[in-house]
Length: 134
Image (cartoon, rainbow, N blue to C red):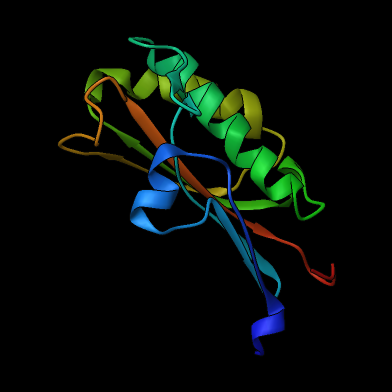
């Protein structure tokens, strides 16, 4: 694969610049979206509400693959990271609302915490773009 085959998209997350990462990377037939929270710029949406944080985070992740001409139907894998097991049902409900028709492979983990203690949910996704060019 040549370097021309890889394309990166930034979202404006305050951590992208300081940590040196991209929101999404397309390489070959896959698009990977890294850890996405309900932050938009410096504003956290859904503070204290795991359902709302999951909806905002997944919506932002799907918007990131939109930069490559893809939509929710292209998603083949999701990952959800939660800080509290009590939030599993709320986050699962948000996931179902967005991905029910697609049914991607999915993983849900409970973790110790995130870089900002107000974050309850962080998500990742992978999409398949088949023969779509970058």
